[in-house]
Image (cartoon, rainbow, N blue to C red; front, side):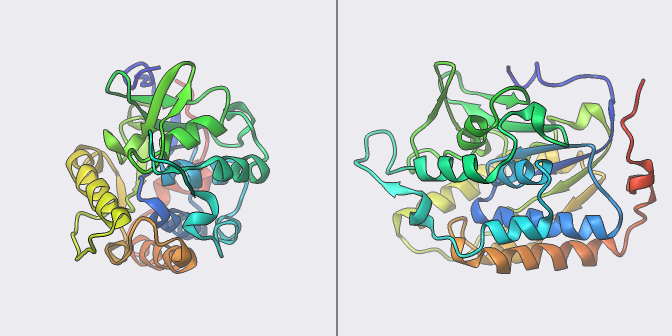
Length: 274
């Protein structure tokens, strides 16, 4: 379905959690969720794009933040992204697909313990699409398939690529349905020095794309967690995943300590029936 079709005017949920893209920097999402849990805040629905879709899926599948951290520790980029002859992408991610199949207990959206919406880009028609029903693995892969590096993912005959191409911070996909929105942005709008390697150039291009399409969604958040330390990492710094997780936790904990979180706490964590 299209982005517009995925939006309802009924506020069915109390608290929504939106998780941005950002490559391995998305592990800061798990750290932020750990901090939220310590303040007794849990989401009624999650929306994620790219890395946010991955972390969101694991959390909705019942993994704790620390377990998500452990799952992605000691990984390397080439362990799950294999080089191929560059026809429609420099790497294929069949190994990562298999990794998700083995690690995720849920194989469909309906099996998740928390409703999840995953954002991908319909590359054939140039529009943002939201997945929330049926097969879970393919939309996660589609949402994470950064163009040029990875080939598009085909779902029902349509080519999909990374959701961050058009919408790197998927707040708008749940905003109309939620009373409150907590957003975690793993891609702060800060530019650092870069090398002229292929991975670095693609990462910098992705960063500039996200700068252009997240401002409106940031303004929709009731609580915005945006760890500035993420500016010090590249989206492919997979070996630093635990370090990124810790930065997300510490940053979120410090920010949340200054807020009144009573409207978000678990005793108000019930689906709203209108």
